[in-house]
Image (cartoon, helix red, strand yellow):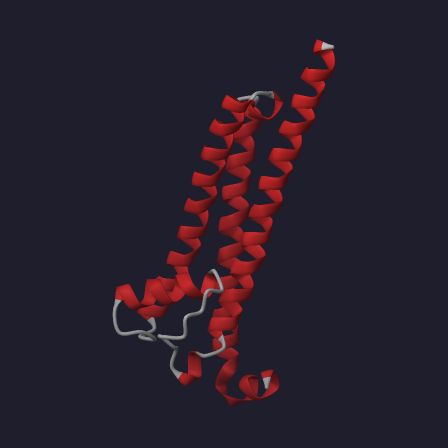
Length: 154
């Protein structure tokens, strides 16, 4: 199927899809870089206690949600720009449910753009996995700090 798409004028579409994935990955990398720099600059990862953890997780969650929302918006703007969907609300809604792999199926892309749905879903899944990994790393670091503090108290 992929070969058929390439030979039926799909080279342009394949390049566009690859470009969107590249933009998504770059946005995530920049967002991660800014986040990690802030965590290091504020010594957030060396703190222990429930209150610092709650603040860190709240900030981390908010930042990651903003990164993902920006990535969804890039895809939504693309769908709108290409006339794939009738209006901005539909384009951003479709992008959101596709990126998150909810996929209600109430909106679909025109036939020539159909492959963008699974590509966006794969990109969203990978970016969500990276965010989950970072979240896990921060919580693991916090648990390690908490265990160290508790051990010193004994």
